Image (tube, rainbow, N blue to C red; front, side, top):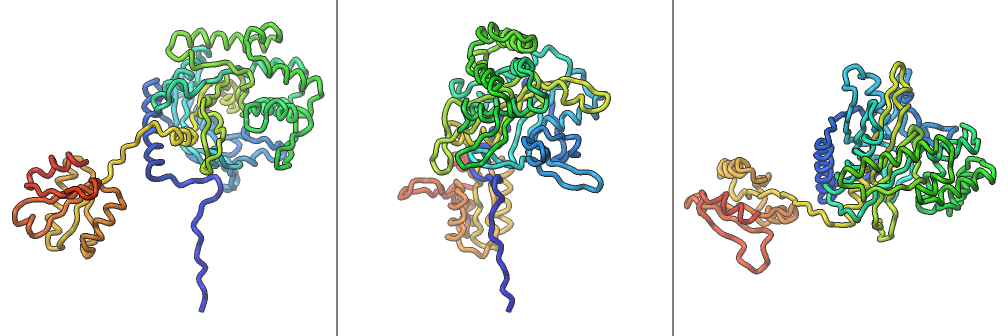
Length: 465
């Protein structure tokens, strides 16, 4: 006799089922985020999960020898296709493809899942939801970027955060780019330098970790080796000294490169516009922020929490930025005949969810259904009439779907579902035109059951739910 091999239920690393309170809270956050995006004047866009690989690019990759190592790519006839790893690259393709039909300034938002083939853990997933807002077109950068900072602050507050629980860190990539040019760092090393700097605030790095990545290599606690940018000691030393500067006045005095000065000027203009709004106090300068993605070339932003979160084992973890982004002037120009600058931000919704579950300061109301019990199959039509009355009055409700089960089993099911009320009607109720309601969430030992005239059904149920 052949033994059947049973499947073991499970998920690949970095993927997660979400249900009950977690999913309900996520849906609440998504509703608040989308509502705020619309309030700020952004229009929705939805793009497919897959893009042609050469269109989406390989901006995520840190391994030059395998530029698509951090994404999921597949052969599709004579082309390769890739699951989108962010929502900016698909936007660039969309704008280039539909440029003639779009307004001169295109403000779009997108809320969709993205996919990254990277190590998971501590609120880092391989499939996760991003909520993006972008402004594409020839605009005043200070105004556009200030609008995005205001949007971040407003959205997080709408989601339930308090002002003292997050900080919006801003910088300008031109500041570092000017220093890199002054140090005569070759083009092939520049993106590695940017990525090394971007890791300064990541757990386990700090100045020493960044210095190692600027030089030959970095070895982490596990013994894994990451190749560095191979800068000489003087180049690495000057970058480390730059990273220690916190004050914009000191930066302005010590770095005279024209591109660096241009980046500083743009930060100052950003702050001037921010001063006209309500959230300037939420925004701080952090010149170490350069963003790891290669297409950013100006304004950069990362939003961090002012509290530590804990993982499932109770260990404190740093979940990183919950909203980040920046300015990109050449992302769309990769496509023939189109050269339009853009700037945008992206909220990591699942990181946000992870943080909100830690705080437990946003309440989720679950509207569990009232259950109509089936006491006798001969009254099935009557039970469906009761069900219709409940639903017509916008009361979440369901009928038990197996008339052969006794009342005890039906109530056991209702309790597991956490149903608030059971409607119980037998011979006596139908003869006397009454309905019995059982309060399933009542205090044990108390009288949690009433019988009421049928016309009072809705009013009595509303008292209990």
